[in-house]
Image: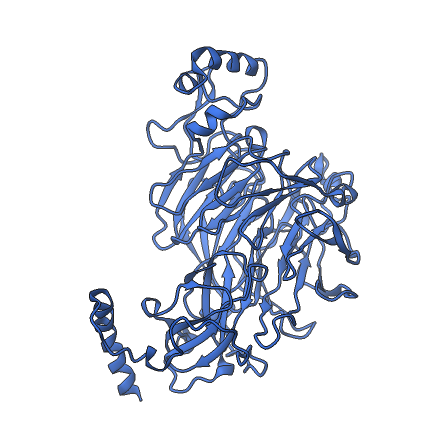
Length: 622
């Protein structure tokens, strides 16, 4: 058998050449597959009802420095389908630690000739750690058509080239005088996600960017494009969620008890705002309902959690479909920033309607914690130590409460390739905001949702670098976790108690134990399907080191890489797919049946062998 397998590997280059030369060639992988184009439902697909236990390891993970100085602190982060991570900070609080290339300075105040020559965003190569600076810009089309906002300015020389002409430009500039004039686009505390085409959509921010919408495509020299007046309301600390058709909702923000519905691929569109009184109802004296936790659920409705309450709404009308029980213990949203995730959704190909969807909410602080830590002498209340877990598809569901190993506020909650979750970053006391937290939580925790309550959490190897306010993290295709940022200060301060952090780390979770490499499958991407269609079967060609592999040994996981900021990973989603065939060289799986399960766009697909994941392959579903 081993000889045959090695022979097949030797054939792979010939198969590759044959495919491009259009020469008929025997394909040992496809010779026994169903007819091409067959797309009927697969009632015999399995979803690991009798799965084997994961391979055990005593490895608690490992940390390494990937970059000593990235130049920009990662307030927001998004992994793109070209394996570059984009992150950015606010653009309005002074210099970063890396300058823009010559000729790219931006006008801050045209009358005073103040320009900003510092980068506030970077594109980071996750393989090489190379950095490219990013610069948010207006397109001329947008600058020409929009009304001038009091909080931003393009500059007379630029406006003279547009359809308003010099006279119109002068009038617009006079209207802006007498107010604070800021840089063209402030991304401070904004929201985001990946469009169906793989573009980063970034919504809201502060000051001149508070109603802005930005896009950047995953290409070698792309920059942000922006419409600074695209949104209907000021979206500072808002949340996005992609809908089944690729549109986004942009929910909430400071002073905004409503949401926008925006298209996935345009900066210019009719405004569509829908009221959401729930956000007003959940506002404390110091908010505690910003960056609400929002998830698309399989019936097409939205689960929205703010402060300590949750509802389900129809996104097209704003109508409340159902109210859920109050989660006791304290506040869970900014500034008492807890963590939340939609737990992995196991798809049932035999009965597509029998899908249970659960939400996990962890950490946070008491409602009064922000006020007590706001002014000197500051009092940092201990962060919450509990988690609540609830089924959002069961009408009479109640919160199931469990304890974390340590207290945590401002942490990230990431879904790993195995379907386990990682609690990482944050503090053990205080809240979000500058200077308002203490006692860094250096120890990540793995949460295994399939285990019994009381057995789900395990502490891992700690880091030595505090990652508190304005830190972020992202799961990478190789299974490592990229960790960056942290700045509890209003500017870049390297002498503060918690200095601005520009080092970038990678954390290797337990499944990357080198002793598990013999269990690790490899996806042969050139012979696997990367374009998926809803409800259709697709093939994954696999290299295993094992002679025998059973159906129950294997999981196929689809992860939507999130936009992570302020302790919440927006648009994060994992699907556990059904399988119709498992061999040593081939896995046949079934794509999710609709956009309510998996909104259109790019996902990382992993094959997991008894808890040991392959490297992720980018796939696109539509």
